[in-house]
Length: 230
Image 1 (cartoon, helix red, strand yellow):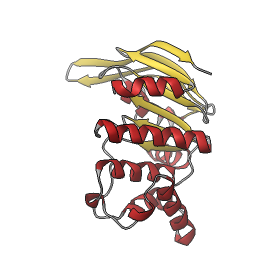
Image 2 (cartoon, rainbow, N blue to C red):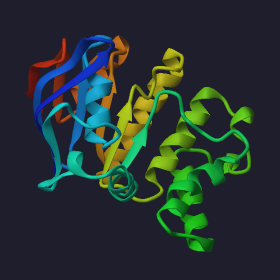
Image 3 (cartoon, one colour):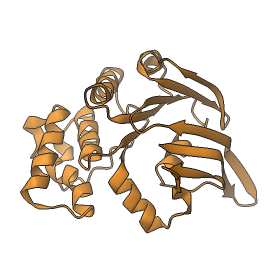
Image 4 (cartoon, one colour):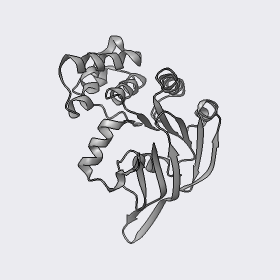
């Protein structure tokens, strides 16, 4: 379980502090499907980055199975993320000189895995996201939706307990975005992959709200609504 306890995040710009999160508390089970929604600027991405250990709170704590990940060193948080989480971003962050397969291999290589077994797992992840025929294509040879699928496969290669997706459709057209949302929900449904999706995309709100086990709505850095559908 990942948990945020009274998390505050303030960014300092000169002498002025911008409080993005204002005392957020929540719990997420590893096999749950959570949708975090709200307008732009509500603090959704900041919250996800804190849950993933990509940033640390100004106040409060983030825990993974009772361990305070916000107190770990940068190297320890990176190792935690590599072993426990898969993170999908809006802008893919694929290395352009590498093939789809090579991009998916990277988290496994960083985690100390290598050889044919890892390549088989990476190829299987690409097949699971519908890219069996694109293993040797570089990002520049792929559409936006295909690049996001590679990013999802990369997030899956270390078999994470929880997949965290930060605006995964924000850089895509509506039709392709719908396909990515369906893919993520299918992965969760078939494999019981824990899933947290952050979005402000209005057209995806209804679908996510209908399928998610819990919907969390953020506004102005606070949780203003939390409802369960199960």
